[in-house]
Amino acid sequence: MTMGSIVDVVIANVKEKNGEASLFAQAVEEVLESVEPILKKRPDLVDSYVLPLLVEPERIISFRVPWVDDEGVTHVNTGYRCQFNSAIGPYKGGLRFSPEVSVDEVKFLAFEQTFKNALTGLPIGGAKGGADFDPIGKSDMEIMRFCQSFMNELYRHIGPVTDVPAGDIGVGKREIGYMYGQYKKLTNRVEGTLTGKSPVDGGLVGREEATGYGVVFFAREMLAYHQDDLTAKEVVLSGYGNVAWGAAKKLNELGAKVITISGLEGFIHDPEGISGEKVDFMREIRYGDKTLADFVEKFPSATFYPNEQPWHVSGDIYMPCATQNEIGQIEAEAIAKSRGQYIVEGSNMPLTREATHILKVAGKMIAPFKAANAGGVACSVYEMAQNASFIPTAEAQVYAQLEILMKNIHQTCVEVCEAYQLPYDLNVGANLAAFERVAEAMLAQGIV
Image 1 (cartoon, one colour):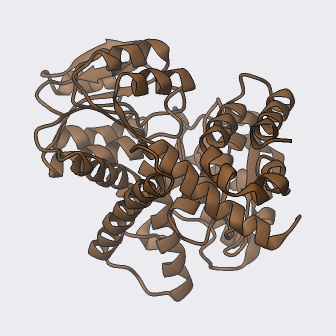
Image 2 (cartoon, one colour):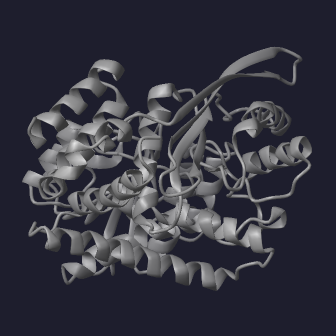
């Protein structure tokens, strides 16, 4: 079989097994179709077992999570952990608490996490997990009981050199803290098995901001490559969680102006800019204490657009930081007509394949999420090192390391494109660099 036909067969098998419209199939197709230059140069990868193994997770764990609410009513949710690939190192990836969490979602996230982690150059494999539990509107005691029940099963499958979960949507340092406490209770061990902890629990100072900061550092590198910078750029930002919050903080520090934030209920447009106290208010929305409607009441310069998303707002940079596939055909067509030249993916796979095609045809520059938001997992590894050594890392050192790492990831993407005589395309560059590293490790370890 030819290289192309083998790739087509692998993609077809994934679609047949997981469904044409699955998030996982979408992710696999996007990666495999972009690594053709490596496969042409390396027929050993095509002829070997790497491709079939690469699209199958090493392990998926599913379990029930019973918990009791404040009224004494019992609820049962489903928990997941997809340990996708450990060729490079122990599994690493976040936990997501959201009603939409499913096997398909955690498989897609874990698959992409494998390549994101490879791009950092750090020795970590890919995993993801979570539960179909909605923390919004729950009391602290309800969240604590759920997290403890979730860990009652998950603890059997994780460890500091096996699998080290972190936070994600719906899981911040509060939830991580509750899970970490239960893990210690069950194992009688104090070790770095969860990252994203509060500094008082051994967490890394600056970890909460890390993903958003890293997204902005990567954006700065992309703009610099095109002899441009962030000064006075208007940024259309989605989300209000940790990634969006961290990005908003750093964008303001570097001279840009954030003009939108969003959630499931709609979006805020503030032409005066979302900075200072307004960025702080995002944290209150994140933890369910306030809403986007409350934002408008507190800050009259802002307008709330219920049940809409911000992609028709004109800006210089578009930075989706909410969830997967938030920009489809209609949204991409609006961005394509705007003055903005840059799309920086802060959330995981925020563009559909159709949206990516539309924006590329329009000549827009896209910073792919697996490169742009890799700063969060890198800082999680710094937290693991801190926990293993019992030596704390200073905040200034964390940010300095993060800046260097994001610069190196951008440079790696550029150099890979140049090596394969390809035009500047960060998505292709990221996929090529990450795929090559993971595939080499899998070849070295054999059929396992």
